[in-house]
Amino acid sequence: MAQTVSANNFSESVITFQQAWFTDTQVVTPPLKSDAGWRQINLPDNWYTSHLSDNKPAWYRMDFEVDNLEHSWGIYLPAVNTNAVIWLNGKRIGDGGRMQDYAARNWHRPLYFGAVTHLLHSGKNSLYIQLLPKQSGYGFLSNVYIGPELILLPAYEQRYLIKQSLVGISTVLLFSFGLFISLIWYKRREDSMYGCFAIACFFWAFISFDMIVQHVPVEERLWDTLVFASVGWLVICIIIFLHRFWDEQHPRLEQFILWFGAIGTVTLYLVGDKHFHFFSSFIWDNLLIALSSYMAWFIVCHCVNKPSIEGWILVTATVIAISFGGHDNLVQMGIISFDRPHLMPFGGVILLGVFLWMLVKRFASTLTEMEKLNRELDMRVHTKSHELIENYKSTKQAEQEKMLVEERERIMRDMHDGTGGHLVAALAQVDKGDINKEILNETLQNALDDIRLMIDSLDPVDEDIVAVLAMFRSRIEPRLKYSGIHIRWKVQDVPTIAGFSPEKVLQLMHILNEAVTNIIKHAQADTIIFRTGVLSTKKKSRHVFIEIEDNGKGYSDNQQNGRGITNMAYRALKIHAKITHFNSDHGAVVRILF
Image 1 (tube, rainbow, N blue to C red):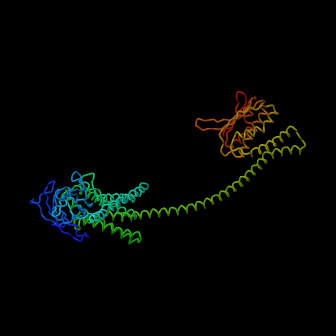
Image 2: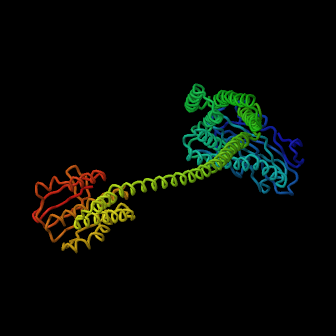
Image 3: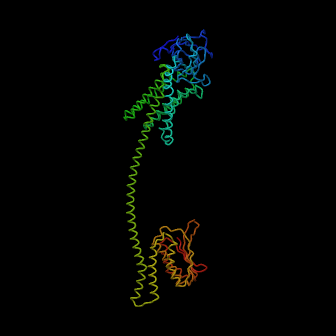
């Protein structure tokens, strides 16, 4: 039976088949018209609603007459499930791909076969279609059209654009969304919100990819399980993402839906081929719609409690996505014709696009807030730095003033205790009129030495003991030369002494001066050796030392307890040093340990 139908916006020259002859005879070439198995059915033919069948190929036959063959003709099949082979007047003209061993999937791909004019006869013709259903026995054949290519080809291209090209674009977009957010998640692994969103994007991209892939790498049963399971995990990931996005804790609910997803996935794989379509379309998908309804309710409640423009945009996108998913579910159940385009990929682009916009907006807002905080922090740091600089200047000035006062007091104290005492003694001799030139000369010489030592102690030495010794040598060398004493200099570089202030320098010079004076007066020596170095003890501590050694007669018992040595020990204590006196093979040694 053949008819022309204007409802499809085709001209009368296009033949539209709304009925066909059907047989499930298992042959590889078109069955004869005389076979008893042919029965008449209506198109579109949904096997699940029209008749139960196994998963074996079946045949359709359409008889028609052609009068005018002036134009090039083609055959157009808007939808098949899952593949088909086309025969015209006993000649095989094409197919939608492999018919076995992971057969081609054309359930969302229109088929078109052009340039068939040479196979048509003026008068009666027969068109045969061998349909390969899914393994679950779910087959479908839409209306079939044969007519001029200039009419059918644009219709095919338009449908291909909607069902393949646009779905392919949405797949790429969804995968790109997931890849982009995955990179953010990689840098912020502690924030599971980004991970849930990225996984949801990949699941939705896989679902969309199922609509455009023609040859799958695994057997059909496993592939369908992965596709339907992905729909469930997609909903689960979006729900968990929303919980994280709005900082709400629902651990028991999340645990429940995770178990729901795991059990559902296993059940999808274990259910038999005969019941797979019923379970996946009528049970699993409807449960997911209920779960999606919770998602929509959760979003609406949040928007009611915390109204915002982005929230209501998300509500709108969620309603659209759930509506598209419900539409596709009605198609799967056969309530809506199978040849209708599936809308879920476009719902994914809309919903996940809104989610992505919200994430980017939040990310940009966070960056803006961080930049604002950084600017405020910079201003505070600048202000505090300025205050610290001013405080440092004030403190430094106060410290310098304090140091000047302390240094002034020290100099005055040293002059009073040292130089002043010598001058008072000299003045007392003059006042009494009992002048001993030798004693007066020594007293004045001591006063002069004290003044020189105070002046030398004010020179910057940067805590360098060797520099102090060099200054002392320049002062004492003329006096030693006058006394007939030769200097041997065995001074080497030693570590600096931390905190060696001018006051300590003066005390050290007094010790050195006292040691040299004792040698001049009592040692009867002609050589003095100045030596420096570092000593290490058993406790692994290190000490800088100064030694003054002469080649004189050495210390006697009375000299070991003399006033000069006691005074030297007192001064050493004030500079945190230790002084020892002992005789060597050549004379006497004074050792100062720091």
